[in-house]
Length: 353
DNA sequence: AAGTCGGGGGT
DNA sequence: ACCCCAGACTT
Image 1 (cartoon, helix red, strand yellow):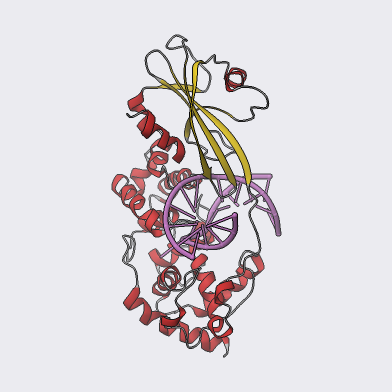
Image 2 (cartoon, rainbow, N blue to C red; image 1 turned 90 degrees about the vertical axis):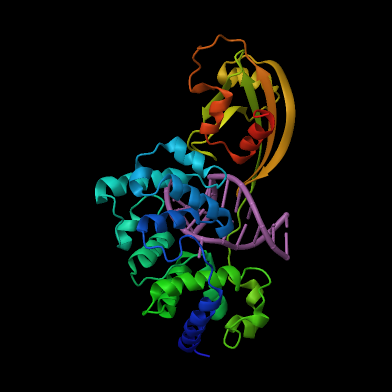
């Protein structure tokens, strides 16, 4: 079958499929570019089920771009806590402020202007342009790559830039010019619920008669992806320190590592030979008293396998003594700061008791 | 072009 | 274990 024919069939069938199986989600048929944008950023590398409640909480707290622009980074990060890829949270604040100051609170409709905003890349720019402004552009996310590669039995690796341009041409050809927004929404839903990565149920698929990968028996190996991620192992030792007034010492994580902008207690990493007390003394100049190891957990990120050890201890320094970069925090104030997931769990289990 | 950035769910 | 998810940014 020829490519043009297959794509025609796909477009027609997709429309029928979507009428019956399209998902109802809070941002579907939304017309406010602000809400479209927020939903798209939340859903980057994130499943709909995981992002759903975050979206509602953000809209509830920040109903428009002005409210978001006027907020502080710590509050945005706190609302984002647990969702991961925290540069997204920092970037939505930057972009909100730019949209307010430069565009009077109105998101631009053109791809080029959208791409210039922090946290908006090719996918998100196309999604905003298409869903909010009905511009006729294709969206290319993981679902679209998978669906198109299978429909056409195309083995171009989707993680190479030349193939991505190629797929952009395919998607443009496949697009329904009468309803590009509806087509974009539909193909992502189709990829997310029918043409799934593993063991899709091709027997009931409406595209079965012309799906080239089904004919060729290559569904399970498509799309082709070449790059593999290298995983680094790390061992971190977090020490929750109380002073005599039951205040905790926390610090903000700096740029250049995971969890930038989130908070943590005192932490040491390379313990090469040294015991934790010595490492803390060397790094922070703090003398810990009554150090106690509590437990350890494994925590897996995309590029790192972490082993996290949790300790508690005391210091006897006087209240108000300033330790550079550290802040003293009352237990009830911990809830105002964003912590990495495993630390948030530690707080729940050991401090809010 | 390659490396980095979370957390969760599925197989 | 490994893969993937409505990807983007830095080097």
